[in-house]
Length: 286
Image 1 (cartoon, rainbow, N blue to C red):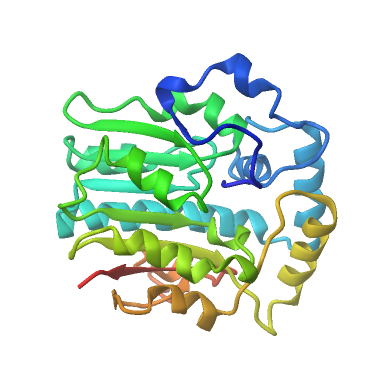
Image 2 (image 1 turned 45 degrees about the vertical axis):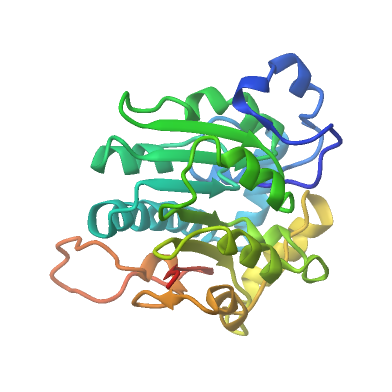
């Protein structure tokens, strides 16, 4: 997850990352979104303060772990579609979060081993685990940039060392734009990233929503904003869809992550998967 800005000289690549230089940036006294998300996904890269906060949020919104899982599964389905069906061979994954199963490069390189992936995050614990994200296939390539989503020019400059911006790129923004307040022009940030990518590139984006029938989600977010860091900024489904303005939105549009092209489970009863408060979509740049 992209966290609040950290005081440092500027974005660095994985080769610059030294454990001693980032250890002081890890605050274990306050819960943090990346670590709580890891807890909900069943990971071990979290601290007691994160587990306690995660349990409290789960009491307010019992389905929170389900939508963390749904978001992760959405990532896998979207990446498989883009590699297997569209032919995308480059991914720029911003706000990647802590490594878990089926990271972007693992999903993509199982389909196309030559795929190139650049991860971007500024969470110090994620940076500490960057080596796990850099275990690429022999044919492909991965890199990691320590940067904030707001540092668009720096991200593009460093990503260009691994990615070819004359060829289509999949821009992955899963669960990250929620950290950008309206006063920071989130739509403009996404547009600047897309403007640097050629025709045929794709945007994969997910975002926690607010809706009248999801009051428990609002309560959980309010609890988080009072106790954790960084601040979350919910948006309506219509506001999330605005991030795809000017793109060709792939079917079924911006929907619950659990309902974006769900895989056939073989359940004879049929029916759509349960809706979650994390909505996502995939759009193609013409």
